[in-house]
Length: 466
Ligand code: UD1
Ligand code: CA
Image (cartoon, rainbow, N blue to C red):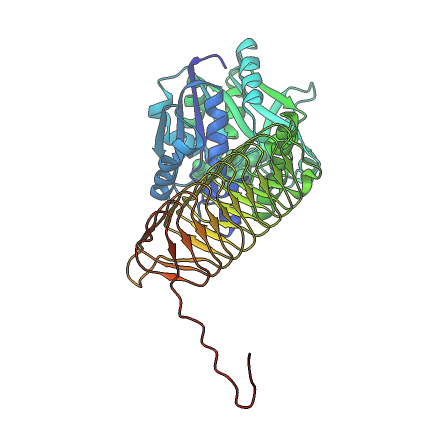
């Protein structure tokens, strides 16, 4: 979107979020894998303003740290200024606290910090309507099926803006109005500045309502316009855990729709949990019960059978993930097969065509090209070459009670069933390990190691063997 050098976007996120009943600041609660505030910052950035201000107050330090840490992950690179609101006495005083920042700009867009579903296109359209109508202030209003809790937009007889009345201050007639204030506004700075000075405390909590500035601007004979939108979902304010789940469901639907539009096959979009940042290639097939979390990238033509969980991982093309596979912070190259019930723990890499089967766990290991760990194994802190066959029940004993140690397995090694590798230990290329061995020493290239006691057969008295 075109750069807007006169515009500053201010996000209000200092409130206590009491109704969430949580010690975690409200803007940090996740919706589709990203904090509410991340969604709002992304929309604000996409609008391309000259600056973004973020008002923090309740748990200010925690908020600032979490946001600063999150910005690169959320892809937010726009200049961001933190403003601290020390006196938490309403949305009006939140904006007042930001005046030193705002005065550098002609126009100010204010967004509530609890509306994760708003979209940059809506903000863009509202801002261009604001400019072309030469408004003094503009508020985004939507008609909702259930206006409970929201500020109502009261109009004059001719349909023009009169005032906003908060739910808690509304009389019976006003409560019937279903056109609500979305909490998104644009102001000419000079009018906003004057109107803020004129605010007086209101309502049961004696708060300074930002919403009252609109009536003040109107009283000063400046045009205050209502920008109406039919898309009430975008205005959903998250004040409670119920509203958090409503936002989640709506955003999940959006994410699934985006992916299907991009060519992903999702037979039952209501039954999958895909986070906002996921990228999935054409014709990958996502069965019900799958969780695709965090920053996960999946290639094309992959099959994700039911109940697959993937977090912060990269999956190549033509990968099959059978029922119940769990992958975290790992890389799976093209043509691999995992599961059913395979477990990749962080920092694992499966090279092209590798297979990890039933009840095998891999941790911080490389499984080389075409290598197989198909049954009931634990491979940890291991560097495994290509073409290795690991027999059922093989364990790398990587932990001595104090430290973790490495197992190195070369190319084309054959590991019989039920083998223990006591790390640190190395097995060179083309070596073979007999079933049931406990390997504690180097196994040189092309050799056969058997490390188990010989079978002893004790005859039972009276029974003869030939
Ligand atoms: C607000 C609006 C209401 C609107 C609704 C839309 C006011 C007075 N009311 O009500 O008309 O329909 O949003 O969702 O603005 N905040 C601060 N500092 C404070 C108080 C609040 O930064 O001292 C921030 C909050 O973190 C939040 C935003 O302002 O992001 C709105 O506050 P909230 O308490 O959620 O207002 P609502 O009652 O939802
Ligand atoms: Ca709110």
